[in-house]
Image 1 (cartoon, rainbow, N blue to C red):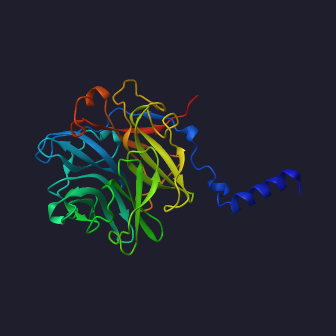
Image 2 (image 1 turned 120 degrees about the horizontal axis):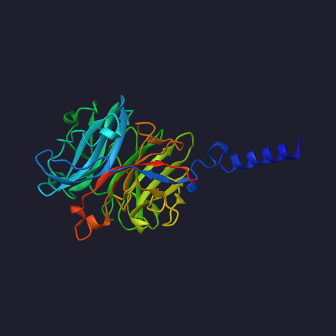
Length: 343
């Protein structure tokens, strides 16, 4: 056996022993996180009896040759709701009719949509409030449908737990991801903490355990977690404030959903997506990369992303358009980031 061959055998043994594995040693390289920004693709439209001034918090899946997009809208007649639109190509997104989902009469926003294969149903997870739910009225909630293309087919929202599971701060931006045995619910609390709770697939969407802190760092909100296709590793992206741009995204990686999250691109100068590593489309329409969702390579509860084909749907706004406004008055728009190679 040659010296080089011996070295490769030993190296492979070490990587296997440490649980890294050659095929998954570097599924994502932070030095390659460079993006091209689209023009604004979706703006708010009057619909459902309200004149909305903002569309934000996108969640998107592709089914039967169409994109199915769900997003929060905000207005003055009604503070929050979730709208649905579908289109075959992103260039047609702005002209697609927007429909307010008739699943809740009050506050509901920040959707996540996926196919839950054990139930053979589409699930929409969101944050919502309803006085009839008792204390606290604000909770993670869910709705289901058999037909994602029919906005009237979604069931009325139901809370995912009967009472607040701990005495800590209420969370927001609830996010579900599953592996073969468990469902995990992640959320943030706007104080540098991301929380995790879990339940069995048999009990989902109920039966959640006491939440624990999954990650503590300089993070803010809107954590989204994905399985990296072809690797037993998971990626979490989380929004932060005041880096290169008012809002930007950090990234963390773990080898288990209930494991430790390690920084991948988690500083202002080396972020997952910020004004520093995003190219504008000839004009500047946003100075934030906010509430970003990765386009998934599958629609089911495992939330796989293809590391070789990343795309990001996000909300953006110019600083001059948000200054002097309350958060709920900011005129967010939706855009798309696609990878770009630097010369």
